[in-house]
Amino acid sequence: MRARDRFVIDTVRSAGIPLCGVIGGGYSRDVEAVAARHAILFETAAYFA
Image (cartoon, rainbow, N blue to C red; front, top):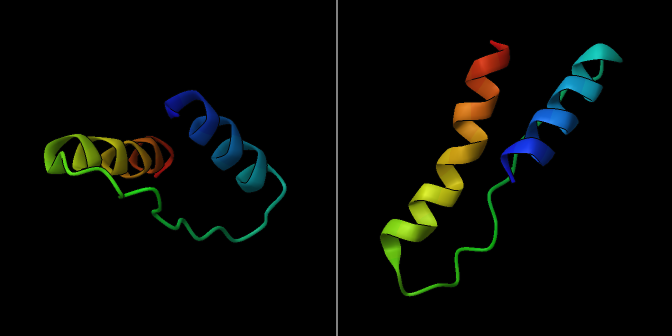
């Protein structure tokens, strides 16, 4: 997921297109695992900030 997010954010920013991230897929009962997956988007976006 991290590589995918990095690719998408880099591609969209390079094209000068605004980007909005939406978190999905939080259907697991393992709250920590869901939070860790969701954090990937924020960590990856912070890399480009």
